[in-house]
Image: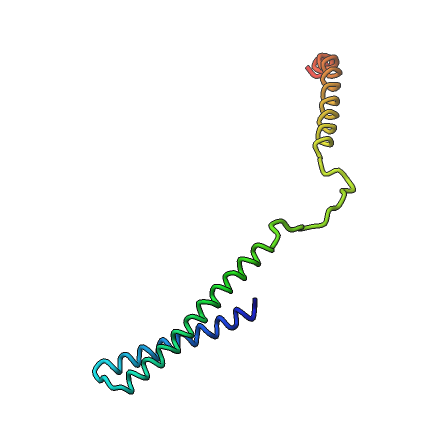
Length: 125
């Protein structure tokens, strides 16, 4: 895959260079039409065509390689190994026990205080 990517980049630069050469040759030959200029343009055009076909083929191979990597890459990955907890992580039971105990103490205080409240009120009044 890396080799294809490197060769793809190399051929891409080469194809762009031939494309620039062809454009310059076409610009030079607009006003003057000689056999030598025509021959140079045809030679550069042939090199460009070959380079462009190799570039297209490598682009196809590169895309196929990328698709193969995506196909072979698993969708699910294990982030952490499985571990059995050593203590309960649910604090709901603790909360229920604490509030039940608090309610019991408050209820006992209410029952006892209801009996003694009138006596305490008379003492200070």
